[in-house]
Length: 414
Length: 114
Image (cartoon, rainbow over all chains, first blue to last red; front, side, top):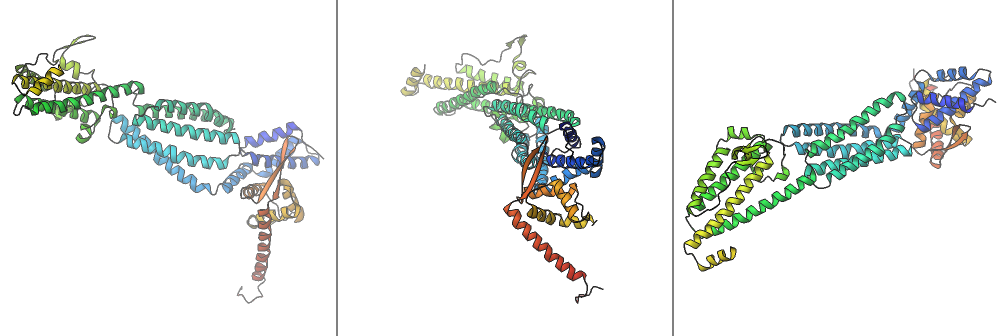
């Protein structure tokens, strides 16, 4: 009775691997089977090499590989439909995500919705189905573990992108965690164990690289490059400013309510309307959103690109909103207010910049401005006008010898 | 040697019958046993046998036992309870089918078969 040596068994094992028999349990079967065949042939006096060659020939040219394919297709007949569904879902989701990316770059409306549905589709529909299919095809526990890690990493990554998109805190933490999971757990295991064929290793390595880059790109796109801690503090500051404007506005209206028909009251109202119209139109043009949306838009939801995109378009389409007109209206209002005793003027003066003196227009509307700085500036202006006219209103009421309570309030206030 | 088509349709029954007779067997043993029993008239190819064995295992009709032989592992297949009942069903069904086929093919039975 001929018995093969360990080396001879290794030779056969490597040959099976080389022929692409990656399914472990099938490889055990075939290894034993071929060994039996070879041993039987060697009984008749044939040497190992010849016996092996003969046995493999008995399988036919593609015989070994076809056996594995037949096994896989028999085992996976149930998951074939699932595979098809998941492929269709994958294609639809990635097309949505790509379109979202394009829209985002072009600042077209609807970019976030597209990106969001694409990401949700990939991470929460396509990947889980893919993992279920893969689970049925693999036997190695280590690989199964890597799939779970990969799925988990992808879900955390998708969640991170979602957080970025919605400007929720913690997005960076999620994304970095997911990249660590995918890069340090999933990829090393997957690419060393799932791919046993040497010729595929390089292309798989390239694929891994591309995958990582894609994940980073997703991060860049959804984040639009804003650092979250920095932007968070800016949002908070701006929100405070908005609250202050609201408060000052109410108080101003109350104060002027005691002075019916006052022309400063009317002028102030008109100027503030003009400034908020300016703000709305600047947002409309830079963010490509309709007027209703622009009116209530907070800087939190804005894209902060450098330069006031769309400002030139705004000047063409809405010529009433330009820095020159704004300056003239501000000066008119100040002239009026000065008659009522406005002491310190609003700053329409040149501004000292790091590279020398800048005109008022250049400083606030020039090429180095962003939509963020413009909106903040206009909001600041609104606050100052409200506060100054509130002060004037009480002053006028006091001078007119209005009711004792009013003057009391001023004394208390000052 | 019978045509592949016939063997393909009956392979499952053959495997179940073999295992119910012999307890546990490994793949190569099955191919040899069938060759011996049929005087080489039925040759089971590896390309058909192993996919079927794996499918039957996945369906819960067979279980495997791995026995190391030197540096290789031999997988012995045997019937589960479910596999045993499936084996008797399959065998009974096939015997019945053969009776029917014989009835049809022998002609002399009132059916207009030429």
